[in-house]
Length: 154
Image 1 (cartoon, rainbow, N blue to C red):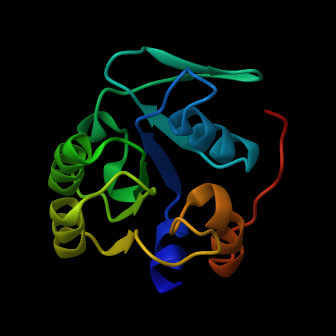
Image 2: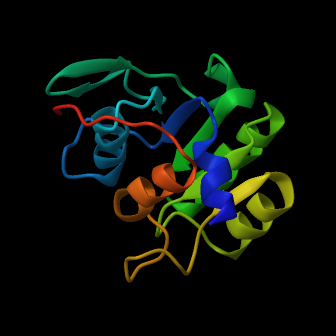
């Protein structure tokens, strides 16, 4: 839980793999941050914006395009081959904490992440049966980190 506290202690958040497709986890994760009134930036190199019903978010193409990467925790929801390159760039710009959603990592991704970031949330644990997931474990993490959050409409 210490890694989760560190993750949520950042003043900013980003979602690598954000999507306009409401059926994809990249959309669901962005919506989760929005619904919890957290400052979030979607990363998507192919789409200039991600549209939620109540807000349009301008995207950035990669971690290096984030306005304050050293103050941003990064949720990753990309295939393992993409996740590794995202993490390499995230490390190069000083992102301190990453949350690798289920299905986004393999051994190489985990090894890189655990070597290069202050906090890594991934793998077994959490309340769900598939490992740590922001959608399942995020609210408990916010509470554990003492983050004040409010609910807002999607």
